[in-house]
Image 1 (cartoon, rainbow, N blue to C red):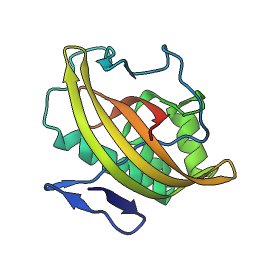
Image 2: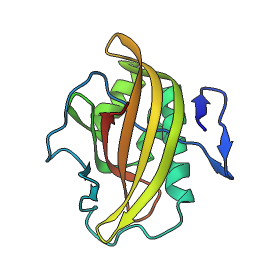
Image 3: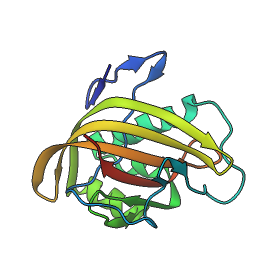
Image 4: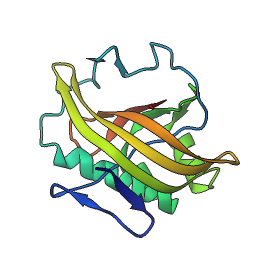
Length: 171
């Protein structure tokens, strides 16, 4: 079952709000050093203790992030990411938090619809990450489209922020 996030509607699943995550713009492969999730192995988490709380907190954080993306709300979007967070697009381009937030705020990257196909938290001794598959409709640098994205977001130990997200395509 899939769920859709739009500017005005948030759907619920199993008592938790459905989520989506970062998007990119064109197809390419990520290099191994850019990936968080490779060959079914979790890669090391942020320094410090890994996130050990419930799955609900990062899922709600991600929901807030995507509503902020669709509303082009820079302040709310920034509040879901650590100061040193990065986003790796499906092109392999890496943006800092501030670069990405600015491109959303000025609508260089404009998100209109996010359909969540699946989302779950994965844990290991190295930390925790939120893995989501979405169908995201956006205008990225003037290119309109809908992309099937797998998004792996590294969860900060507080569960309320993401430290790194890597986007790739799924079919």
